Each structure stands twice: as structure tokens, then as C-alpha cells.
Length: 319
Image (cartoon, rainbow, N blue to C red; front, top):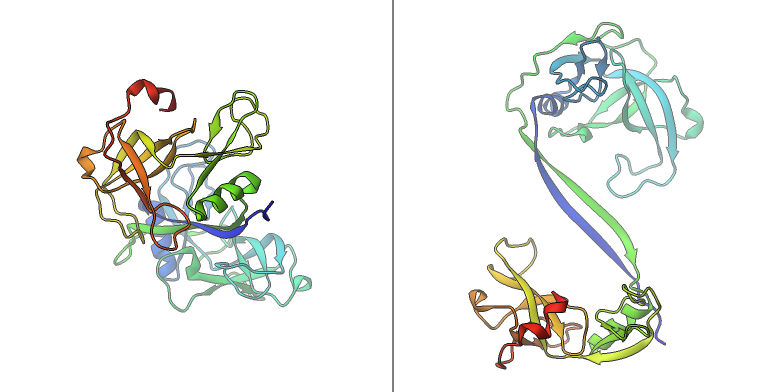
């Protein structure tokens, strides 16, 4: 049996969101080297600010300015920084209660080692050289031996209108996950077969259904599958959708059709792009075959075979 495959994968999604008045003021303030919190009806000052009181759920918009100095309430040492973290050398993750605030802000503390960090130590903001209106406008915190800095004393944060020139109205928050994926024994065999332009599934020993791509176990019976069965290469479109939004870094013109295809001999439909036919002529029951490109490890798309459409009763259980 060939060695089970594994490969590094990245899932990344740039999430775009609009900002309400509170978050807009907070992030725009960071750009202007101003730290804002929000005051609740019972007098607490929350930093970072939120739009609704976490205790009463009522809307809060009373912005106040707090100091860029504060006290570490708890911490953890990060001995091996990862991509995208605030510092590229070992640092401490800290919760800092800024002077004038009643809650703590999570950020990085630049320190020579864990022995230099302690709960209760005084710190101050180190501002980034270039600021755009993001939490990273605070480059990190650094140790500070002085008194609470203006404009706020611990008990009396100063009110702030939250008005700035060119306020931020939205942000793009990139979400990314780096991981190593292993498809397992069954899908490793499936991928190796595809590289030879063959499609191989596995048959359940109990219900005798053939699953493509194989999972290594029957989803219905819950028993392991081992027997390999070659299916296709032709198949039937069971359901489909028309894609009208062009995906980033995907060199396919819209509109195009993405479909579930039940390969001949398979009891599970796989998904693939349909080509070689106008998008508005794709239909359920359309008979299709794979189209391979030179050197490809999987079909580029499926195209009509020219056969008569399959009868609905032959694929209705695969919808």
C-alpha cells in the first residue's frame, strides 16, 4: 500500500465588516494615539469598548478617554512567536488594565524574558510608527516606571466625543488557518488513482453501496470499507448551481456551473465544474464525462457526452 499522503494547507478568508459608532471611534482613536473606552450606566469603564453593556444588555455610547499606561493583571510567556503575531521575538501575552479602565486589554508586552514580567507591573503603550486604525496601532506594551499618564487618572477618565477627521467606517479582518492535512488511507488511494485518470471508490461490505470519494467507512452502516471499485468515468448531473460571483485567484469566467455528479457505478455524487455547454442549458439528468488537462492530477471539468438524459428514477436517490 502506498504511503498515506499529507500536505500543508491554508484556509484564508478576508472578512469585511462595517463599524458602528463605538468601534469606529475606538479604532480611529488608536490611529490618532488616543485610547477610548465606554462608560456603563453604573459607572464602569470598559476597554476595549463594546456597544452593549455585558451585564444589562443596554446600548452604551458614552465614550471616555483613558491613559496609555496601565497595570498587568495576568500574563503568559510566548517563547516561540508565530506568523502574524505582534512581535517576532519571544514576548509576554498580557492583560493590561489601563489607568481609568475597569477591564483589561489583551496585547503583547516586550520584555527580555519571563523573569522580567510579573502581575502588577506598570506598563505603557508603544505606538506603531505607521497607524491605520487597527489594534496593531498599539505595537505592544513596554515596562513603565512612571506615574499614570495624562489624560486620565485611574478613577476619573475624561469624556470624549469620539469625533475625528476621516473616521473609519469599516475594516477587513483576515482570518487564516495553517494546518497539515492528511486524507487518510482511503482518499490517498483515491488521489493516486486520479493521477492515473481513474476514479476509484470503496464498497461497503454490509449495504454494498460504493462511495466516491471514499471515506474509509460507510456513513450509513458505520463499518470500515476496504474493497476498491472503479467507477465512471461518465456520470449524471443530479443537482447544480450557477455561480455568478468570481472567486479571487480563480481563473474561471462567470457565470459557470458547479454540479453534483453521480458517476456510473457510484452511490454518492461528487462535485465538479461543468463546461462545454452554455450555463443555461445545464440540467438535471445531463450525461457528462471528465475532461483532463496535460499533467493534471484530477479532471479540469466535466462536459456533455451527447447521450440522452438519464431518467430521473435512476438518480433520484442521489439528490
